[in-house]
Length: 388
Image 1 (cartoon, one colour):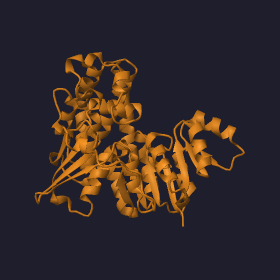
Image 2 (cartoon, rainbow, N blue to C red):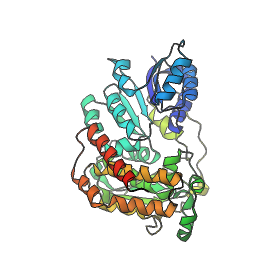
Image 3 (cartoon, rainbow, N blue to C red):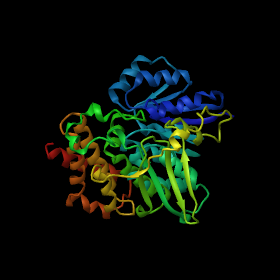
């Protein structure tokens, strides 16, 4: 029997990689739903290739264009994730990949938990801001959760079937982005085009800038704290320019485990689907040149000060994470629009995250999705009023 699959964000890099992995063993899969924000050309091509009957297009203008253009097709085209319950009703999904970027991915994540046997998530914002809500649903519906970011999948693989209390420390690696060896005194000269040249990974613009500031590592530490129920003081970041080691776990028994793989997201995606796959993935030989020159170092906090934000975060899930996500999103887009320089980008993220009016949200836990969405709107309004 074919395994039933859902991919949200199928036109983005993770979604495309997931389809590339599935293509290797196509006969064992039935894709029930694909989604995109606005790339209607690509999603319709994907739907035809994989014989998908349902697609969601979030952008209303693009939805209307696709709906009118392909009115006679046998594909059901929807304009909102609100139709998820209608699409699935009492159906069960074997594997759902949530690869939507932004907080808009939280609500459909919660909806799909009740239909999915296995839920793979690469949506940072949902895991950071709404983990307590997601985890509640995972327990309620007995859904298996699989983190897909290379760092978290590596940790997941290393500590699987082990008690978290046996872990002494988790080390997450960071490539350091394009500026790991760039002089700090020249940070003001960095242009968006420079920051978008990641040396190892091909990603969207927003996450690539986060990688350049190392804000993505702040977010990944928060994710790791949430997912693995471990305190911040047991998680460290090490720079590793080759992106070959993705995580190191040191156990209380004196043993340490390292997980390595090429910087290719198809590898964690494939391994999250091994309960289905019969074919092996093509891999390169072990790279001894990299292993003999790992170049692991502590983060230079003078150069990448945003890492210090982690020292002030509460160990419980709070609404402050939503504040942090919103501030970072707002300022990254200002940088991409050339409204602020790279140095200013980092200093303003740090400055605004420490404002007293935002600090109070560290004491408040999100009770539902609306709490998170309301706060995002409030913080966005505050940031807009600053006239940056």
